[in-house]
Length: 263
Picture: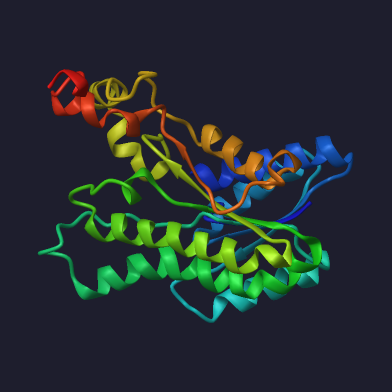
């Protein structure tokens, strides 16, 4: 399996790369080939070392995906390294905490550049390679795409746009044999959320908000990503798979209305 993973320096991206490497080797009986992309060079090299220790071929490319010219460069690197591509995991994302009133235009545009536009540009550049292999795309969205999340106005909006973008890809590119899906993580402990979930009190409070009373791990999200790119999901496209411990089912209980049929 030949895969590009963006945001691969840590968190969900690193976990996805490792899971895809293992699952590919298990299915195919030969090492996976992964191109890891991120702005953080040191983290990329750490992820690559972990993959190489498991006999996968891992190459790295430092890239700031706010630069629209880098999508083609990333794809050219994959083409030169692997001769083709089977999957794109567009996972890179940023969170900027700000109310809409206080949000600057620069921060708004950066959120959409990384969280939404980069997926379109990468996928567009990958289209010929993925059509040739009848491959797949998975982008990392968020439950914040479905529910307004103050003070993450630009983040929620950019992730909502991402889900619709990928559904549009699924519709347009399905005839080319390309499957396109998203994964929407709920409360997940990653480097991006470490400030909150490293605190035992805050972690316990957050865990109580979903039916499983658990905080997710990057590995939970990686399992969903690998499934959507694997042979068991060959008839799945245009789907947003929510991986949140049931958090998004808690709207009515949290509202205090109880049983809606008795009110």
